[in-house]
Length: 394
Ligand SMILES: Cc1ncc(COP(=O)(O)O)c(C=O)c1O
Image 1 (cartoon, rainbow, N blue to C red):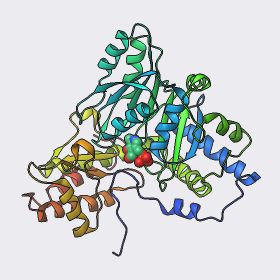
Image 2: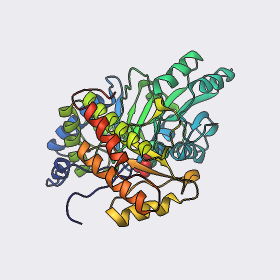
Image 3: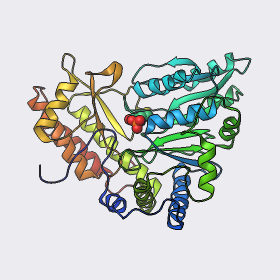
Image 4: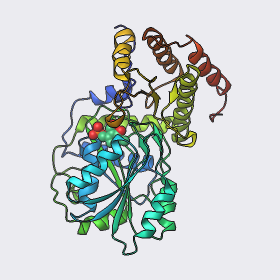
C-alpha cells in the first residue's frame, strides 16, 4: 500500500522517523566513553519521564513480560503473600508471573471493564493484621479493556490501612500517555516496555524502583540472574552494562525522550487525552458501546469497543485489515471475539486519528453493521474543533 502505514493496535505504536533515524546510526562500543554519555542521558531522561528524583532506573533487553519478572524476582521471596488486582488479561498475567515464582497471590478479582477499587484494596489490607502481604500488584492501564485505574487512589488505600506493602505498578501502556508521578505517589516499582508511549520498536523493559524496593531487593530470595538489579546498577554507575545492551534501542530511546520533552509532558498527556476523547465520541456516535464502564477510568492509550452481540470481533478485525490495511487490537483472554481495540498512543495527530476513524466506519458498514457513515467522524471532528484552541479536553 502506498502512503503512511497504520498500526492501531495498542502497542507496538508507530515509531517516528526521528527515532528510526537515531536507531540506524552506526553502532558504538557499549563499553566505551560515548556509550557512557548515552546511558547517562537516557537514565536522566527516564527519571524525568517517571517523575522521580529518588528512584533508580533499570533497563533490560526484553519486553513488558520481562519487566514483570524482574519486578517480582527482585522484590519478593517464594512463599511471600501479595495482593494482586485482576481486572483484565494483563493484570491476570502479571499475577501469574508472581505465582510461577512461588509467590502466594491473593487475587482481588474485578469486572473486566472496571478499574481497581481502592476501597477493596484498603479493606483487604486492613484484614491483614499480621502484615503478611508484602506487595500490591496493580496495572495502571489495563490494555485489554481500555481502563486506567487511579494509582494515587491505590496509594491512599495502602496509607489508609497503614500497611507497609510495596506498590508494584505495571505502567506498560500508560507511561508517556498518561500522567505518572513516581515519587509523589510513592510507587515502589513502575515497569514499562519500549513499544508503547516510548515510541520504540519492542525489545526493552524499563523499571523505576524506589529505595524501599531496593531494600526489599537485598533480602528477596526469588532465584534470579539475568533480571538481577544489583549487577545492572553497579555496571550502570560505571557507564555500562554487565552484558551487551540493546544499543540501537538506547539510541532510539534517547531520541524519543527528547521528542517527549520538546513537546512538553503536559502537552503529550493532553494530546493523548484529547485524541482519546475524540475517538470515544466517534465510537458512541456510530452506535457502538465502549467496553470501559466508568468515564473517570477511560484510557488515554486505547479505546476498547464492545462488538455487537452475535458478531465476532476477530472476524471484524480481519475484515478491517483486508479492506483498509488497518490493524486493530483483538480481544484477549476472556474477552476474545467480544471487542476490538483502537490504539491512539504514541506518535499520533488528529488528522491521522480521523483517517483511522473513517477506516473503521467503512469497515463496520461493509461488515454488515447498520452504522450511519460519517456520524462518528462528525462527532470526532466537532470535538476536535471545539477543543482546537484549548489546551485541555472539554
Ligand atoms: C499493560 C501491559 N502489561 C504488560 C504487557 C506485556 O508486555 P509485552 O508484550 O511487552 O511482554 C502488555 C502488553 O501489551 C501490557 O499492555
